[in-house]
Amino acid sequence: MKLELHKVKVNKLAWGDKTETKDGVLYVNRLEIVDMLSSDERLVKVDLDFAMPGESVRIIPVKDVVEPRCKLEGKGGIFPGMVSDVETVGEGKTLVLEGAAVVTTGKIVRFQEGIIDMSGPGADYCPYSKTCNLVLVLEPVADLEKHDHEAACRLAGLKTASYLAECCKGATADNVETYEFPAFREAMHAYPELPKVAYLYMLQSQGLLHDTWVYGVDAKQTLPTLIGATEVMDGAIVSGNCVSACDKNNTYSHQNNPVIKDMYARHGKDFNFVGVIITNENVTLADKKRSSSYSIKLANMIGLDGLLISEEGFGNPDADLIMNCWKAERSGMKTALLTDEYAGQDGASQSLADSCPEGDACVTAGNANEVITLPPMEKIIGYPDEANVIAGGWDGSLASDGTITVELQAIIGATSELGFTKLGAYTV
Image 1 (cartoon, helix red, strand yellow):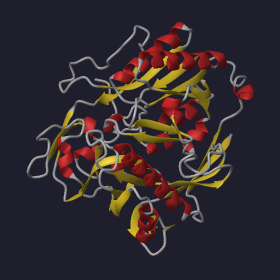
Image 2 (tube, rainbow, N blue to C red):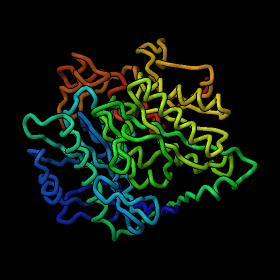
Image 3 (cartoon, one colour):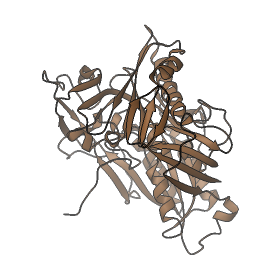
Image 4 (cartoon, rainbow, N blue to C red):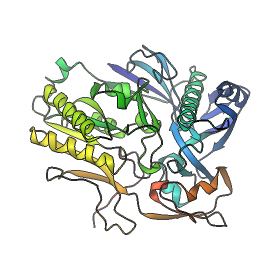
């Protein structure tokens, strides 16, 4: 499988009579998008707004973030099983409006949406403070069930992202990135002197409104399986999650998974990157046992020497992470774990809900309980009082002057367990 990402750089958004990109500006026809999304009977009102890097703007509560992409050549369409047919993707040419993002908002589960600040200290923790954001303000019909509300928001974000890219098909790419994913008969014999390593990609799937979708199928309904790395880039995995904002894998972070990109960069140098296994995160012990054993069985069938394992979420999924770890290690594979911590506001509490002696190579994306004060913003898109109920906030988080005091848990992407975050580390 060979995929070319044709990236058109977007530095600014502006309203226009025609949706197109010129000289780094993405012009958006507001009426066309409103008309397109208003056809969904679950939505009573649709509004659009812009949020640009450096502006005194706060978006709250945020549901998802999506990068505009569409297929230029190759089988299938973007976001298969959602806004296009379920044909396999990951080959051909895909247009990417790099620097642009579609942000969906809405009070769905309330405590499991988040905050994006476009400037100030909050922006330093949020990767989406640097994207040019088209914000969809979506108001549901009265008494709409929460899962229907989530589905309406999810579809609106994906349709808008696809629409923006489709309207810009004629644009000339500023750069082209090429990724290849060979057949196993070739991959397993390449670089015989290097260890064979794969990526075990854990997807949040712990019940209603904790969903991740693969080719339009809820991941909780699947067994672990193999997927091409380029399929992920082509929108095969989308977020349906209403979970804590800091480590929710938004659709944008799936599309731009830095674990996959880094493994490509190190392929043939430090290891032989031979595949991606996706697995779910479950509620019951029996389901955790089934998925972890099945994942490691697949890894052994391939003949791996090592696994990089990333988690999504915290608490209950820690058990899935650790079960994957020790089962892999005890079957002869080395593992490295990518997670974040909930170590208390003072950093002194136990970081994970589970552990094992084999989990001795672990990368942290930060402590989600760290407290931050977000200053008032000149413009609010959404509902600022949600700061008092979202995870990481509390009654009184929102002060009368608009200041918000919350944990990093409330900021979208602040401790992304894919490493899609702005946090770093240094040696002392």
